[in-house]
Amino acid sequence: GILFALTNSPKESFADHLEPKQSEVRPLGNLSHTNLSGRNLSGVKLSGARLSRVDLSGADLSGADLSGANLKFADLSDANLNGADLSGAELNRANLRDANLKNVNFSGAILHRADLGSADLDYANLSGANLSKADLSNADLPGSDLSNANLFEAKMHNIDLPGTDLSNANLTGAIMYNADLTTAVMSNANLRNAYMVYVDLRNGDLSGNDLQNTVWNRAYLQDSNLSGADL
Image (tube, rainbow, N blue to C red; front, side, top):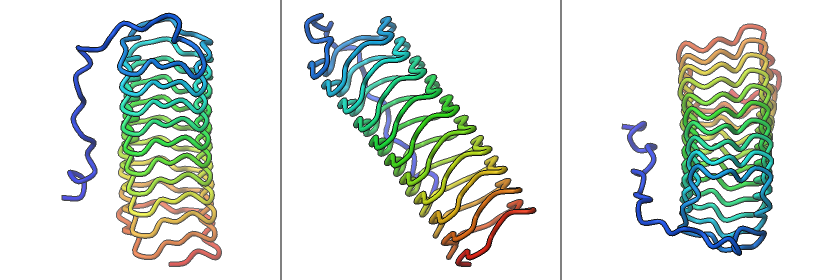
């Protein structure tokens, strides 16, 4: 069915990863396919670095500069990235499950098919980010900025988004199940063909939305603003 089609691919093994050269732990360095799991990399400067398929599971990257870095297929599960800068970074199919992503700057980042399940994204900046077909199930995003984000066919089960800014976001074909969107700002968002099941949108702003062919089931829209919405 639909949910199976959006499930991310199985995780690969990181058992054969190499130990990194210390000289490469720098901006624009090459750390692809290395093992940095559990390392203390707080505040590290790795802007533009090549980190594809790197193992950073459980690492401390709080306050790190990873802007523009290539983190495709990287394992960042359980990592602490509180306050890190990942603006413009490439995180296609990256594993960010259970990561601490509070206050992270993901603006303009590419997170296509990334796994953000159960991640803590309080007040994260995801404006303009590409989260197409990403898995955000069980994630916490209160106060986060998803304005102008691409959430095409994103999987969003049991997700907390109260007060989130989703203005001008593309949610075409997204699946929201048991989602808290109270007081969320979704003005001019595109929800065409989206699935909204057990969604709480009370006091939300849905003005100017494209809601054509949106599937609604047990959605709560009390006191929501639907002015100018295309139903």
